[in-house]
Length: 267
Length: 276
Image (cartoon, rainbow over all chains, first blue to last red; front, side, top):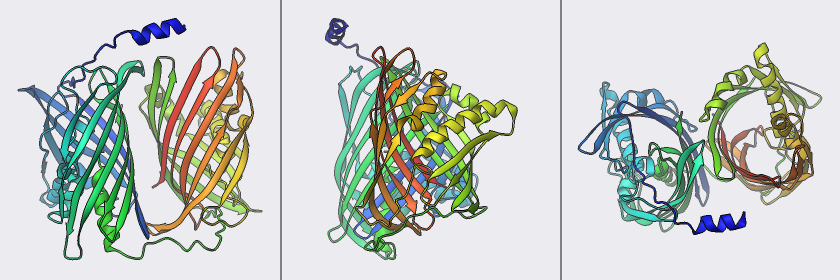
């Protein structure tokens, strides 16, 4: 058995091609549970958000797939965001997607003009979610073997778009974050071939907040690690766990933000 | 990262507001469950579990919503009932039997510290009776460490205080393993449970206490056809409401490696639960 294990380890690993293989009119749903705790010297704040989003894939044209998205469920632990679900359901989102997870700008439409701000918020939020690839994953251009990495950079302002959107011009963020993807393993999960991919995001950006009440600036240092389980048959995420720590240094004020999220495909 | 970057809004809120803050924690605080008759609290949890044996793995995510309803308190013991209201799983075979779970009500008596006794599972429909028995066994194990996994110390506590408990591995997991093995499991050994008060604070209008815990042990397990050990390690943080002792948020990670010689099974899970 030991000899077999050594022989197996010595065999060259077969490279796998990671790409999206989507069917026209297919509808997939992802649930995202998200917890953020913000620690500052004398204050602590917490949020839990639980959302279900559906994606409908259209026909492929010129290497791009048209995607329609709707927030089907939304709830927040805090009173401020609870009850927003029904409004979100009335907003239709759309974007183009390539086979490597690259996503275009998110557009929104709604038949209710009063929900235009919700549409802006959701389109920016989804843009942020897709800023490092569809739902947080860019697939490599070439086939990869276990242990191989690929990388990209992302504008901090794109990455932080979900936060910037509600504030209008209040926020100014400048900087780039490094994103490193690693193929950790290829294994059978639930009787289907899956790739386990780690995603590490690191970076430091300048942050300025300007509002009638506050005018502050400082730096924001972000470090995030995700463990993604990718279905090789479809190229879609089966589940992804993310731990993130962000340190905000505003000179006199400091804060640490600890976040955890679990995103999974609802079947 | 997904929705992670929403934290910037929180920062603005934190910088711009006052009035939130840590509680004075110099005086010991006595933590107790205080049930309000007729009140129902709802909790939602999401659990990502991966089981690996050799080259094969099963990975599933289970989401459940449950209501906890308090009855009368007599001689220090409150009647508490618990029932699922929503269940979903990424595993089709699990999801298939979930409708039966919705028919099951769990009843128990709970004291102020979180000790649970007389736990029963009951179904209103005949087809759910077998599931009710399974639920009863599962919850008997879970509540062994206290009501919803929490058992408060006798005395008042401050930040940094710790308290411990020793759990019987058979009482915690023997019933569940019996179901899995058709009554063949024998579990022996103890598990060490340690709690530590990490902080007192106010958040979202509630006075909260943050409690970290670890649970570990290596019980021996005999399932008839094979025997071996299980190395269990679990750690997590529980945030509870000082006013009534009830859970507000909990996150825990657990790994259990069962080595039966002929087969080695590793189970890892991450659970997040919050009050809605």
